[in-house]
Image 1 (tube, rainbow, N blue to C red):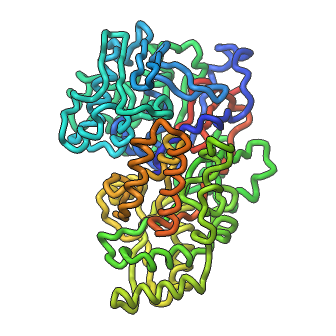
Image 2 (cartoon, rainbow, N blue to C red):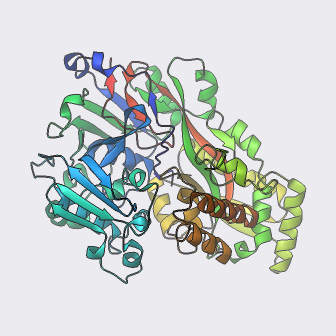
Length: 542
């Protein structure tokens, strides 16, 4: 996604929005109707290496061509790859590409495009925030550290239709990871022709998937996915056009849906109450957590564990979930969300298993005492900080609630709010240019590491710069010597989660879902329960 922002593949839970009866739908009946879709934020990029958010994930997912993707029946479907084999030691994957694959400009799409795409994504010069997802590929960590070159990455075009990938160590979630944009192919000639403009508009992007991107200038709020006749499986794409518009104000989206000008819109808290009994009401489950990051480089007081813990204890998560983000939130008691990972020994939910009782809860008295002690240790009597947040309705409401909670429950705490568009917030987050951050994250794959890896000392998404040597060592064991031992790896992840909870390396707020209205006449949109990307390949409007 995937930042909410970040994409997920929750293998056991991918769902179709609406019933799917595609074989009974004739192409002539389906292709005449445009689907009108909405996004809550502007499209920031179409560069697969730069995509970190749900909006670009939707757009790149609709227009790109991964090796495999999540499709119907909760299963991985072959896309560019018609088949693949895994070696007995789990270290080598060989993908056999379909013949005749084309880019929208007519260029042949071959194994070399995957090699170039992966090498460009891992290249430190590209500055891809999702480059770390390639860590399982041979030499990827060394390339990111500058010790090896991108051409040393463990990916090889054996011939135009055969792609060989070698891993650092066996990875149970490798196939799920490669459904993400950072692993998509890229046309080397086209990318180099566009230079720094690549992926900044529809004209500087090249599609190979079910749809082509049309009408995006790089800054406008209306664009379309138009059926791509050069897509290898075009016969299964029944919709000629999906019209997308950015609608930050949920009242506007709701009114357009009511006026039949939109087929899909997310709902605000008030709208959920008015919509729960409507036929189009959907709660799209997401493996996502909203949290509060505290920047230790900008606010040295945040290095004090008691101050971080006090901030976490000062927040009434039940009120936040029930009253502020009604219909789309469950109070968090862990950072890794519920329903994402199971214990390999007894099938128990990881979040329930790893929860440190009382570590993440509302405790006004404890918060006040810890804050007072922490400030005394830092030689301070008060603390003024700024909270950075997105400019959509829900984000603003959450920020205002956090401001009230912290100021009311922590004597000497003063909180101001900085509200910016999502694209700007992403840049400020990456640059570390904030003091506190209202931050959402969706899993990349159904594994605790998708969340826990974010808070390694050197992780690119560890915006707050929290560090803990025991935490780092535990995750190194999980993804190193214990990578082939599911039980030992699970125990490592459990330990790391508990360290994060106890130390308040981040303050989890709530687990996210998406309350929305979807026109009952729209069928076949595949929703990944972590929120993005939607798969529009089989979408059709009756």
